[in-house]
Length: 458
Image 1 (tube, helix red, strand yellow):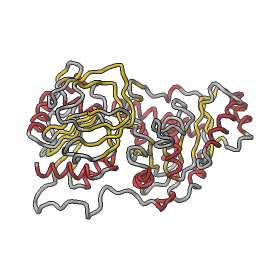
Image 2 (cartoon, helix red, strand yellow; image 1 turned 180 degrees about the horizontal axis):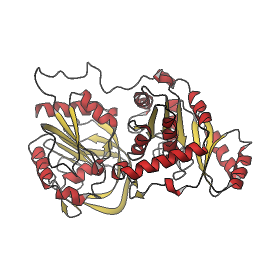
Image 3 (tube, helix red, strand yellow; image 1 turned 30 degrees about the vertical axis):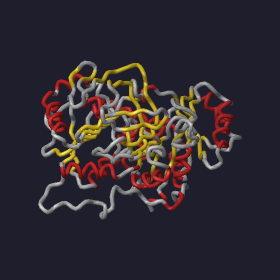
Image 4 (cartoon, one colour; image 1 turned 180 degrees about the vertical axis):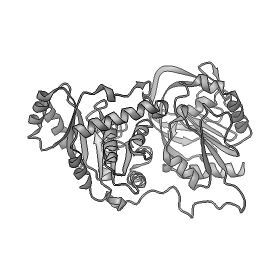
């Protein structure tokens, strides 16, 4: 049964401990055994799920209790895990770290409890020996509702180092399920917003995932880890899998009329998206067509609406600017009143220019790279009516960028941010909704239905 899918949460005491290497390696190693593995990531991260997808051949999905609310975590997990033999959930930051000032909200620990999943703690053991036992004991005893099912020791220097670590942990009651030696060949390159996405380094990413799988298979007790996962039992609370829409919610299409085409930007410049967004668009009656603004000079035939999500347009500003035919077509589509939804990278692309290079010119604003990182969850309310939301609609979002758009809001802003500081942000003009805020539409499915309906009638 889907509700009792075997599952593990891979967590760590802090960022940089090796969660992504271990989680991705476990996914690939289990997949190599012939198991259908469901990959998940705690939090709003878009990049790690790309590596998870390479490891498993399935869509990487996010579980974010802040963006979607705790009640949706288990249903979204079960939706992604349909038909799978085992699920691996990679945590975020340290095990107990969540949204700032919100207690356990959006932490890996909260997600593990919501899923009733055992936690495998990945410990960077490179600079410790006996102290590892105190660290593991502290994490295992901090919250009795969080079950630490085992430890994987990462960055172990030698056989003697391993022996000291195992001796220290013997009395902890937490079994050692793996020991990984330092292996720089499985490192993945990073830049200003984290790991370089899979879409930008496809062949190198495949090699990195294969190296992770080999290291994990060599250093971990996969049999014991699978037994731990199979002991998880049913997901608590009797949760049912999330679904994009019931037949009753799907709008009727007039006889003989084609479904509205919603073009969704993809490729290396716009690789940030949640799988549920396209599922919701399709369930709302749209024909979803993905295109790459770096390579295609025309929008998909019959485009009635456009979605441009997040990514790294600043890295590809030259190529995006050079694709003048597509920039002009997007400007004509937007200025003609067609629905356009743009988030973060999409916002920059719609500006007049980015780092001095011409962009689509839909918005009377300029964008540039800065040294300052803007990062954090946001509570937001729609300031006025738009193609995405009626005035007063409340949503939660996440900002993550090192760019600045001037001005930061149009005459009709997209959102009023309620926390951490009150301000307005983004642009609403004609059919355009453009904002820095990344949102998860599963928390408010009416957003997708409203957008598709506007595509149908505009």
